[in-house]
Length: 452
Image (cartoon, rainbow, N blue to C red; front, side, top):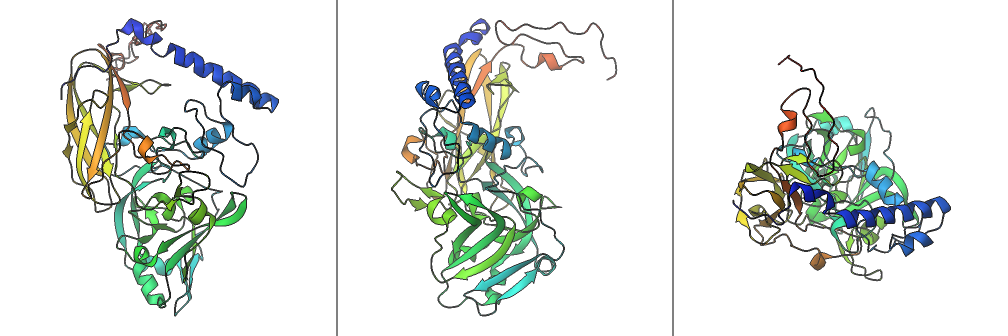
């Protein structure tokens, strides 16, 4: 793959590329800080900042037009709910601690000792089943690509208000558990059964309503292969924040369906109308639109960022030469059929080579080589297509929705090609190198470390 740079930028110009944007951003940040200090958002609004209520509300805040400024509430949510580390996108199985996390309320402090779940509702044989009994059943281990339904929320304009995800709301753990279907069949589904409701131990307030986190699945979906009750991830007991001691895994749906800290399974004879089912996790076009439910994962792909990272902007620096571009792709509606890669901002695309997924519900690795010789700035993207014919959109406008759900638009990774990148780390102590004009380069120590 050979390309011309998206923008040719000599080193001395790099410090001024985003100058006006950065100044505007700082001005907005100062306005927001002042507004927070005084308790008034008047000055923040005048600076085109955002307007997020400080107290609990019965409705989601309106989508906000400013993509460069986030409220203190969104920032706190981002700190609490971390994402996948993109530098590990060459790993088939996500290492422990690198998987994305979303906790709606609080993490329950639970013990595995004496743990049971209740199976009831429209079944012939209601019963309690202990964790020990569940673990004694047929055991399966499957890698599953899990993705938050709010993936890509920050790519929408205006964006919905909740955790401000970009492309990091993903992970591919190996989950160990037992299939759900035999448990339901043994309980005996009655003829009028239409849905299965899963209740977690986590309880809180959303949209002004106190409730336990609960989600339902149609009977057909609950009985599908791959749906399991899991007690381990990557060969270790579930981490507390990931649902210890027992959780549901629904491999083709977005993550909200995989209820954590599972307390009960209730078979219903009518559709569930709970907050997290009927009000949240909907593709809505307006505040009055009831929307359609968010279900299976849309086709998506991501790239491991090449080269070295800038600490703040996350721009990448690479030296001229040959570089391996690689990443992962997945879909809840079929296997990944194709991944294309662009290194010129989407002007042209080239097919990548697909690898073998680790299982039917795992992500699919892809790779290609990029030969670049001309210094400058490039924009890298990947685009996946699945066997159902779905393809990642180039723009989020066509899939915009009020809650910011299912944002699978292509990503744009900015890369600066520059001679000398990577040389500073070849020695110990390192030899600092100026990468941006105007940067003050400290002198290296005058002593070398001779230990190899």
